[in-house]
Length: 405
Image: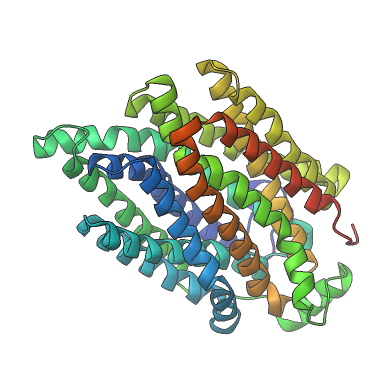
C-alpha cells in the first residue's frame, strides 16, 4: 500500500507522488519550449498565422477524435502504462515533425503529437488519484499543476535562447529553419527524460483502502451515466474555447503587436509561467476555505480581469493581464479536476478525464482555426473579448454543478 502524504509540505509527499511530480517537471519543460518555438518554426518555413491556427486545431482535433478511446484504454491498460506509451508516441511525433516540410506532412505529425500529448495529460490525473486519497488530492493536484507550469519559467527563458545558440553552432541566422529545428530537438530529449520517473512500477492503494476512502468521502461506488460525465466535462469545453482563441498565438501577439524579439517574448512567457505556477498553489488554500466547486468557479472568473487588461493598447498592462489570466486559469483547473475525481468512481476516472480532454480539445480546435483568420482581418481585440466570454461561461458551468461539497 502507498504511504499516503497528509502533511502540506512538499517533502512530506509520498515517493510515488514525487516521481509523478518529477515527470511533470520534465514534461512541462519539454512542451513549454515547444509552445514558444513552434510557431516561429512555421514562420521560418514561410507559413502564416492561419497555418499556426490550423496546426493547433489539428493537435486538439486529434485529442477530440481519439479522446474517448484513449480514456477507455487508460481504464483498461492502466494509467501508468498509458502514460509511458503516450510519451513514446509524443517523441516519435516530434521526430516526424522535424523531418517534414510540406503542409500535409506537418499536419500528420501534429496529429500524432496532439493525440499523444492529450493521452499523457489525461493519464497523469488517474495515476495521481490512485496514489492519493481525497483529503490530499486538491493539494497534490495543485503541486502537480505547479510543477508542470512553473517549469515553463525555465522552458520559456531557455527556449528563447536556444535558436541563437543553435544558429551559432550551425553558422546560420537565428531565425532560420535550421536553427529552429535544432532548438526543437530539446523537446524530444526532455520528453524522453520525463519517461524515466514513471517507468518503474507504482504501488497502488489496496482495494479495501480504496473502498474505505470511497465510503468516507462519498465517492460514488456505481458507474455514472455518460450524460453525467459529460456534464462534469462541460466547463472544459468553454475553457478550451477561451484558450484556443488566444494561446496558440501568444508569442505572435507580443511579437506582432509590440514588435518584441524572440528572447524578450520568451522572458514574458517565462514570467507568465511563474504566475501560473503560483496560481496552481493558490487553489488548495482557497478550497480549504470555500470548497472545491466554489473555489474552481471563482478562481476561473479571475481570468476575465486579466483579459480586460490585455485590451489596453500598451505593453505593461498586456503583460500584467496575460500574467493574471495564466495565474487564475492554473489556480482553477486542478481544483476542477479534483472535484471531478471526487465524484467519479475509480473505474471511470480515465473516461471522465478523457471526456474533459475531448471537450476541451474540441473547443480549442474550433476557436483556434477561427482565431487565426480573425486575427488576419481584425487583429487580437475580438479574440480577447471572445476568450473572456468563454472563461465566464466555464466558471458558470462549474458553479452550477449539482454535487455535494
